[in-house]
Amino acid sequence: MIELGFLDYVERIRSQGHTRLFPNLKQMKDGKYTDYLGKAFSEFLHQDVGINHRSRVFHSFRNNFRDACREAGLDEEISDALMGHSDNDKTGRSYGRGFSIMRLHKAMTLIEYPGLEIPRRG
Image (cartoon, rainbow, N blue to C red):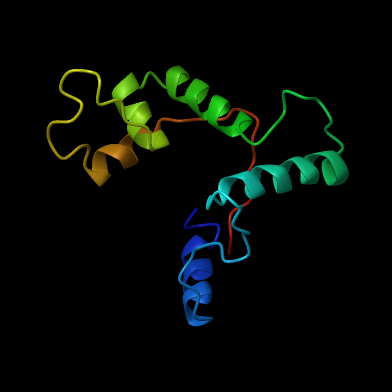
């Protein structure tokens, strides 16, 4: 993400005085922003990309990421941490401070998407 210009984007958003990372997202009646994002992405898939299959939705990214974690041999606990999930019902999950950023980075470097080409900046 850094190589693709994410930090430049963050600085541009800050310099414009925004306090939210994605200021154009609309808040729904329930106070959440995610519903709008999912609907906007579905509209993009249907209208701009031409993908109209019901099972191809915004949450497909989560499913693909979980599968990529499995293929990389990551255990469930580190996969959950990378996905922002927590399951405090499992013994021991609520103890400690969690994984270090270095451990999470190491896990991320193991994840692959064969055939996906992401152009590098510069």
